[in-house]
Image 1 (cartoon, helix red, strand yellow):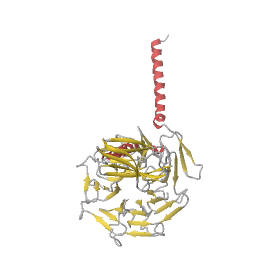
Image 2: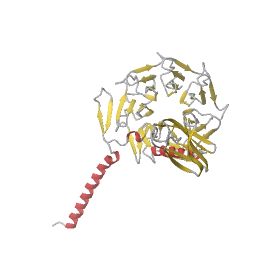
Image 3: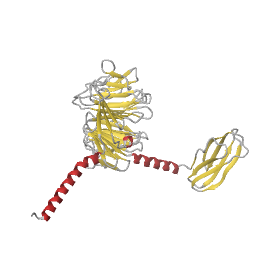
Image 4: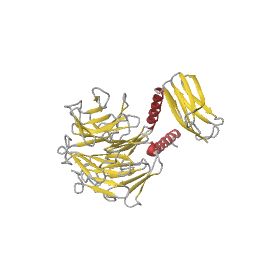
Length: 488
């Protein structure tokens, strides 16, 4: 008879082995938490459906040359193996009015992969040379105007404009484009498209091009003040001025005159410009090329250069920049991703996050403050929605703190019996709250006293007043504000 202890040990070992195999088998399902199906029922367009939606537009997505990642408590990586992406090289990202992402992909060496991929949070749809008006699959820049037209820049074949129905194609044969390589696209408030054309291996003639939908303007070093025919970065400010990264020159173009900043007339260093972004205050953040590059800040009067030796920026070679609604600056390089809030730096790379690659090609931020990061290995989305909420709350508190008082709209309005008026005072002072009729005659005094800092609520029941429009005025020290109310 066999030793019972030996049989028990064998049983325990088999049970442990079966248990571990089961756990290991389930881990990928637990980590991924969703399943993708390929549906090609509509034409030849590739569409992927995510059966268990993880977060849609509320999550942050980051794209690289080797995949896509989304961060909530964890990262999810999207590449050609688990999504509708047909190329892992993510070159450009833009969002339409509904928040749908349009992603430009493709390689410098060309090939059959790549194109323009649409992702609405559930479905992936890819447009390429086989199923659309695109004549090339290497898409390197994407922008969307206010009419929801997609502007698509390619490596060799020029500019494509798509209105969800018709494809327009522009190249050297039917436009003023000096080259087929559209490296950057920006749309101004007048819906003019500005195109940056680089000079190099893929483009012998570069410069700046404007297209207003009917006519073209080409600016170069022979017919304008543009100092160099190598435009690799564009941004539009609140005054509709175009900021151009032109070799080692920063150019401001107001539509008539160009102002050139370089090392000879400013603190602009001798470094090529790779990226430009403009923050909510109108300051320019400029990404510089190479190991001696850095992140340059310019607010119109002050210049400041952040480099590895004088700040906590982890790299000097900057490839892309994006700025969130909360003012945080996101910087992509060939060794990772960084966030700068004006005081603190935070670094993301493959060692401390699920970024599919440290080489960041593009960054875009959607309306929910999701950070979309395009790398050479895929796309990642980083959820920073909480930062936006916090920053909005802090901004509101700061605004109220520096305002002596604030008067709010009454509610309900219109009203027929009583209404409530709220106000806030941030300094102890004499407070007067009065109501006037349409002729400016005083009809009631609601408050006439010294009050301390705080929020106040007054209920007003007009007596023997006829229906019509009235005005209520709050005066606190030098502060005065008036709002309209309607008695029915």
